[in-house]
Length: 322
Image (cartoon, rainbow, N blue to C red; front, side, top):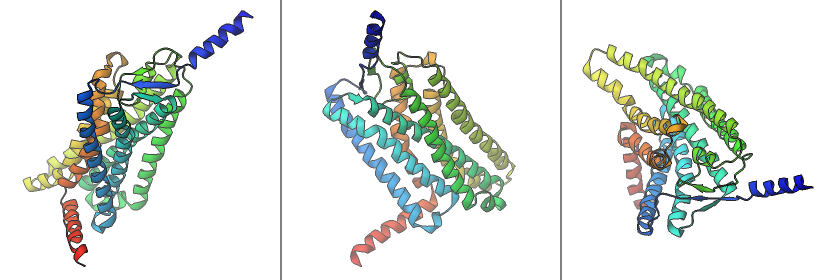
């Protein structure tokens, strides 16, 4: 009779945690108010910039090219990424409530991993697009034809869903019976796994598999593409030709160096060197900063987008008069 009683006690102990506490970025009330307005401004700018870029790409036929089709999908991912993290952070900063339900935390992990994985794949295929445009300009329309672009978009979104479904599905089977305090401003895999009191070996194994497939695969495709791009650029004799070729991929180079470094630091490194305080700052780069920076880079450094923006503003000025 004593054995069942012990088991019931254990079950109660394991099912005790139904919510988590997100410590956020700071405990200072004054600083929380300041951060609320800062992140609210960033969120609005991110939504406006990405939705505007999507609208311009859809509206102007000159931008109906493979590269802008990939940028269109990148903007969708940026909207998803920033909408997963910032609204919950704004609620916490404004109401000073740090609690999040267990399933709310799992849902946040599902969408943030989906966004991060999809963005890695998109950026790597954008590198391949630049490789096709610079190294094989005569065959570019054949290599990046409509069917290929649609296939790339399908790969980006479907593989992203499968990857995050595996991770969140495995996390649903974990037991949390001790601490429920997450030293982060959103739910992420590394800090949540640290709280589990059951076996997480399968979770860690699948995380390593995802790191190899997404991290090494995306970085490998990107580095290989740029190896052949630089090789082709160095073969160009004229200085103007080199500048023109390099300018077509300079924006993408800046974005991937900015984004990949943050992702690699957070997910593709030994677990022994994890520092959750530093992780919060690095997480701001890929979850908050890049969704704002990406549309600005691809619009301000691109002549076609600038022309489309000018036509858009002219049409807005003429619309009330007509």
